[in-house]
Image 1 (cartoon, rainbow, N blue to C red):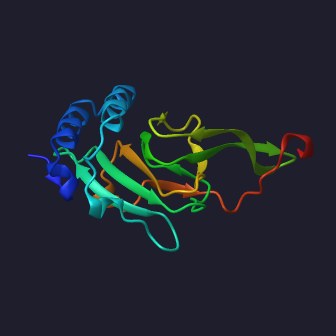
Image 2: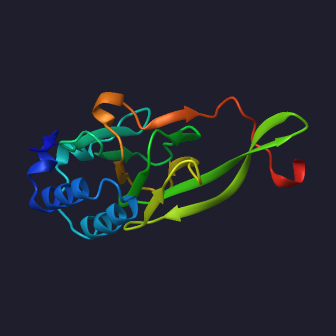
Amino acid sequence: MPHLLSATASSPGFAAFARAADTLVDSPHAVADALRGLLAQDGWLAPADRAPGVDTYRQHLLHVSPCRRLSVVALVWLPGQRTAIHDHVSWCVVGVYRGVEREERFEIAESGGRRYLRPAGSVLAPRGHVETLVPPDGDIHAVTAAGRETAISIHVYGADIEHLGSSIHRRYEDLEIVHAAAA
């Protein structure tokens, strides 16, 4: 029996997605395909799971699989709210349900014995956009709510976020960001 954590879990559309994702726990790209179908539907995310935080984005834990190897979280962002530059404890599939998010990607570089972050591109992600992040490749990023309205993204992790409390493995606040011309 799945571990259901919110009123969203009683929605037939979400419940079907959670069952499918549970069976696909070892295939994040297949989870991404299933998430695209969920994002195309309206009305499945409960009002309580759409509530933003005041000073930072807010995490709503929606589902943890029976095997405790998969979690589904809704992140709700007010305009301009952002994450620190970070990576993840596991693979992560992210889909935008409402609003627009900007993802800035980074790579770790080294020169003259010093490590730093080098920008590696950005993505403006509107509703329906889905990304699959599989560490360690392309997993260092920061996300910002880029529009004028509340943004909501659905994150599926290959980990037990209820137990861990967060999907963040490491924050990179200690490394300077250096653009290619300055390196």
